[in-house]
Image: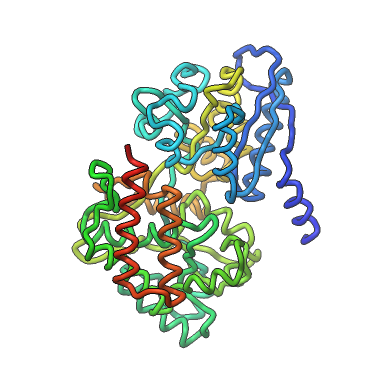
Length: 439
């Protein structure tokens, strides 16, 4: 199995070229298009299967697939777009729209291909997330929310019920340490690689519940929290570490740049939970032993919360390059993957819960979405939460801001600053970053 994984990993570093075609009755001349995406091995395999099905339906279109892990994807795409060399179909993150298409002219306007894409099948609320000044700059692949998942075996050994409140979460840490040992933690949230937002979004949910505000005020181009509230946010993180709820940054740094879902403590259950985008559930579960049992847990709350603190957004979008010579064929490929039964079956839930309700219904009918499905349960748990009145800003995922947050936590964990000083420095630098980013 290790040899197989190594071979696959090696292949994933390469750009695989597959001939592909488009389904539907729309005629297409011979054309070659490229598509790029990121993800883990299972997502790669599912997407390649969808492309292969697309090929059989329309052999006149050739598609070259370019895929890799999360690390380096944005940097590579930025370079490609700067030179006008980006693929025809591009998987993008929702928060990249302000970076690449501030005025709605960074990507091809998908409204021009509305019939081929079947835009009427998608909820208007989903399409609105990618509308920039009246131009549709991407099509949501799936909608995603932050969810709690737990390793049932480890929690059973600790004899602790899944926490429903923040206080119960903090109380679980010492129990894990006492009953299971220093290496066991209730949560494995990290701050690096593909897990960069775990701690930040956890803290943001806590602050939204307590104060009813988002982290970023886009109108003022600054952090919305007061200086004392930013200090509280960093104190929240410090309490998580000191209470043995999560490991600190030194712990994760010892594994290098490896993703949390790839490290032994996650696989063997020492890190017994995760706060993640539900669209990433299969990435985290795929490396687990066959007898491992993962379950969704209650969304953490506090008494008299001002807001649910739930963070929801498109997990990612498919966009078409504004430089594409074949936007019609690119739209056909996108539609096949997100709406055509063969494409939907091939992708399954590897991208999360489909944004297209008809695709959801198809997966329910064939049993992919069922009561025992972890992603379906996480999606349902999020849907049962009160609607948030505090929508999250896409600038929370600004790369400079995330890097600043990461380096600030490292200062704390390596003893290079106390909470208030690190928080104050973060606030000052973050405001400068947002002033540049939000124009």
